[in-house]
Length: 111
Image (cartoon, rainbow, N blue to C red):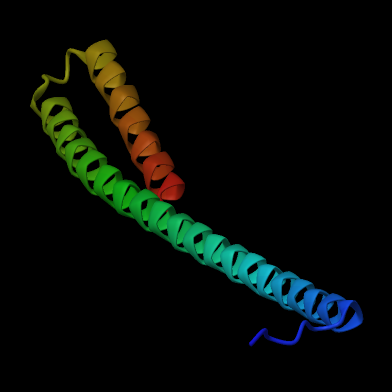
């Protein structure tokens, strides 16, 4: 026995229904892919910002400690110079002021 053949109009309707389903699924997949891309991009930006903040803290801590030590040593050196070495004392005083200014700049940049 042979199977009855569906009419052409019925096949065309089924074909259109399938095309509509494929289009809907494609649009849904595109939206999901776009959302996934946005999520990944957001997480990447957050990770980059966290890394930048970590590096800024490390740089600030390292430079601040080193600059503080240098400032203390310059202050001690200035105090150890004899009163007769006024010109040298002024130079050391200027260096000390420069180090303190640099320390403030580093602190401001890391905020």
